[in-house]
Length: 203
Image 1 (cartoon, rainbow, N blue to C red):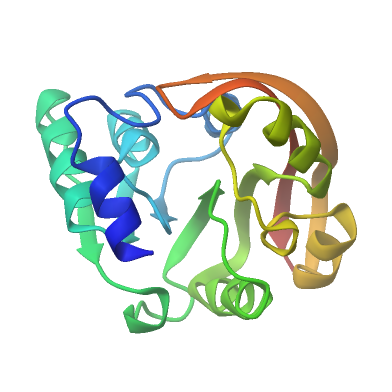
Image 2: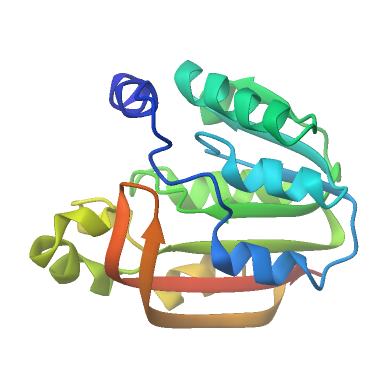
């Protein structure tokens, strides 16, 4: 997987564009500014956007090439972000460190994704928010019809509303929905996709 992402992010163009994810952008607008974590952040478009709003931004990804692009983008916007190159089980943030965590197309294997979500919750303060957008299990036929929309080909790496309710069962649900949307994010998210959108507050 590391080699796959390094290859994708080593290209001159930003794989998912330089602009933030639209759902994240619209959600951050209404949130009080604090410390935010971006797991599996890739080339940094979302982390850099949060930094331009004044957030204290932390991010990590397994890809060295992703970090290089993220730091270039941060320099372009004259902001700084704390970006680690690490596998998920290698990061060691503090308990209750963050006011928000943004999971934007952070797809993991079926064996690990719920475990990772639980770990992330420990990093979040009581009252902190999770902002989540990722492909739903209904996305697979859309991907097969149009590979340019991107997303995993493994059904078990995709999400359902029931999974999110289970993984974040100690959260107040502010928004949880499955939506068919038009994506236009760089080279790798182009077309009609089915996504789960979730905003939750830690109780």
